[in-house]
Amino acid sequence: MKGKVHKSSSPMFTKILVANRGEIARRVMNTCREMGIATVAIYSEADRKAVHVLKADQAVFLGDSDPSSSYLNIDKIIAAAKESGAEAIHPGYGFLAENPLFAERCEQEKLVFIGPPSRVIRELGDKTIARRTVAGSGVPVIPGMNRLESDPATIEREASKIGYPVLIKAAAGGGGKGMRVVTSPKDFREACISASSEAKSAFGDGSIYLEKYLSRPRHVEFQIVADRHGHVVHLFERECSIQRRHQKIIEETPSPIMTPALRERMGAAAVAVAKASGYVNAGTVEFLVDQGGDFYFLEVNTRLQVEHPITEMITGLDLVRIQLEVAAGNSLPITQENVHSRGHAIECRIYAEDPEKGFYPSPGKILYMQEPSGPGIRNDCGIYSGFQVPVEYDPILSKLIAHAGDRNQAIQRMIKALEDYVILGVRTPVPFLIDVLKSEAFTRGDTFTDFIDTNFSDWKPNRCDADAACAAFIIDELSHAGKAKAAAAQGNIDQSPWQTLGPWGR
Image 1 (cartoon, helix red, strand yellow):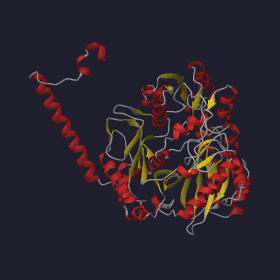
Image 2 (cartoon, rainbow, N blue to C red; image 1 turned 90 degrees about the horizontal axis):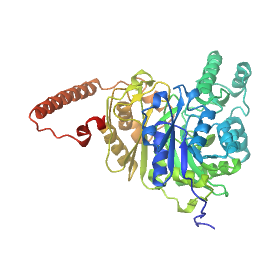
Image 3 (tube, one colour; image 1 turned 180 degrees about the vertical axis):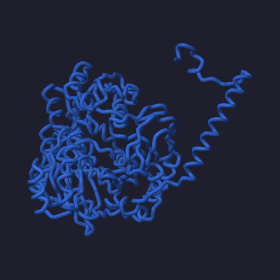
Image 4 (cartoon, rainbow, N blue to C red; image 1 turned 180 degrees about the horizontal axis):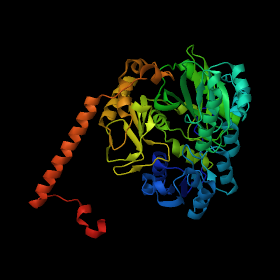
């Protein structure tokens, strides 16, 4: 019935294994804890002291730091779930989250996979099948290949038919992995080999295909949730056009270009895609919007997105809770009519990487960290002072979110939060993100996928500010150390309980 909230009462899980690491594993565990569900972490040698291991109720060691021996090892993860008594597995994002073999194995082992059925992941994960399915539902798609091909020569012939520039894309996974823009035939074969190799390493599948590369589009996606009973709801859009190496670094909602009419059309298209594919659980339907305002289907991410917190901020919904409810067999607790958007939210991804050197990864030890706080600020964080950021995995450290009454307020709130965010020991894009948010182009909402190349291709940090900050930190540390020694000598130092525990605190 229209406007009526669907109700059901299937029993909830008592224990869930989170098949991921870092901030997303911690994020899932937080909701599980609120719901009274025990959690099981998995970890590799590099993650023995990782935050998700420390936060879980139980942890299972998988082996070497190499992903193939740990977070990509299906046999080990299934064994860990069964041995720990977990009833379900949440895959997070990345690693095996969009691997149909993993979901299928869970189904075979009578473990609930908290995501879509393996058939849906397989069909939507094969981007060429997804394109055919979506085209059949009447949603416009970008010109490109509707089949996978492993022969570089055959793919090169298809590129000539489509016309340069073209975009080589991984058939499995997302996040910019296995993606290359090719503007000339002379660069094509090398780009194919490189994209396939990167996709194989990231997702265990090196399959690739082609799409026409659109000039200066906007990347706009719609969050969807669907249950097993045929109910599908979209939770509005997210603007994701600020990208480096085809991977998002700043997301916001609502999109600066969105109108009520365009939102209605794109939202209806997202729901149509979900229904045509038989989608269940949380997912994202991604579109490209050209400069004329026309939109084209891009792909479906069959998992929780990195940027899901901004949707949670404007709707007041917990997407992980909805995932768990749907996976347990319950109906969606919402309908389209009772979902409302309030205010504006922005997310900045904080990576261990150096924006001055092409965003090259910057692993190492976190010497000191101070998180920002305040009204409307949320920090989904996977690190702590003293943590060693490993070289083996994606270098994301945290996701910083700011929510306010309107876009300008959200921008100012995010700038202040970034200025208060201190991470020492590794390079981060925090200064770069501040400059992006302060730029006239971003303030105007001129956010296209070539935003960074167009506006910040030769970006350099303000050395004066960085040097002053380092000097201030050193002086402060030395000053406090001297005061502590003096106070201790006089017997006046105030010690915490941990300092007075003796051997028990070590």
